[in-house]
Length: 328
Image (cartoon, rainbow, N blue to C red; front, side):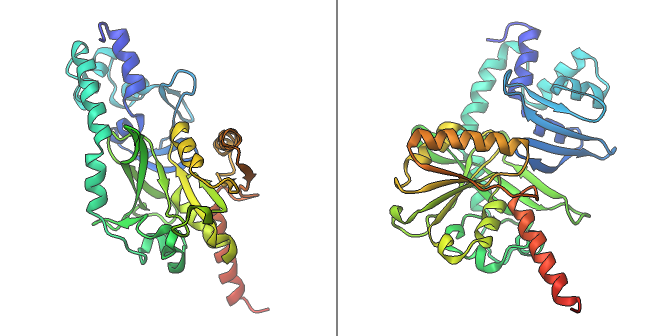
């Protein structure tokens, strides 16, 4: 039980999702870069949010300062420490320190049952003509109709692309969260991204290329379903016919990834197709270790110049279009 304010502050730093807290302070998600979420404020400020690998505290950095959720609230609300504690208790349903442990158990139970995620997923419908995917992300309708991606994304009432994420709960993979993505209003390049409130991280899992597990020759792992679909589109038909895909949202549990890799045939190759950045390097190292643990071949196939595979696809299609209209 949390018995003093120091314990309470430590709990705030570890247990309150800093992305959700920043949204309450006027920030919006601009993009994700591996394990880091980039968020913009109406004032023009930009912060980079992640989880410290050592302390497990949520933290942020910006051009001028950084710190924990405590520092963020104090800076943007102008509160002292006592006011900050009261704000965080009220904003996140923590009535007082003595009740925090009981409340945490309630929140944890709500997260694990996946009710909110299920409601979000069931309210959406599969649509391979979704404008965001076709026109902003430049994915072809043929790709969106591929067997691997059928009903692995849906369109909600706001025309967002919605992706389901799964994690092991009580020994079984269950839906734990959904990610809604779209082009941010008023921009051509920034992406709106919102994950189920209070939901834990999970893994997006494509369909298998056929009903036969041994038909899988490649298991491609990316940081985003958008990259997975772009990677598919860039490959030849033979590669596509033997491929399945996983995407690991920020914080996906290694044990969940391991469980999926163990289910692959012994001749499959695990392909690391993460972003070409520092976070991608770390993910690649993790997948390499897990592949070795299950005795499967491993291949590193990250973009050579662009940041991610969706950007590779966009750039390639843009170049093809320009070449088609410029006289030779």
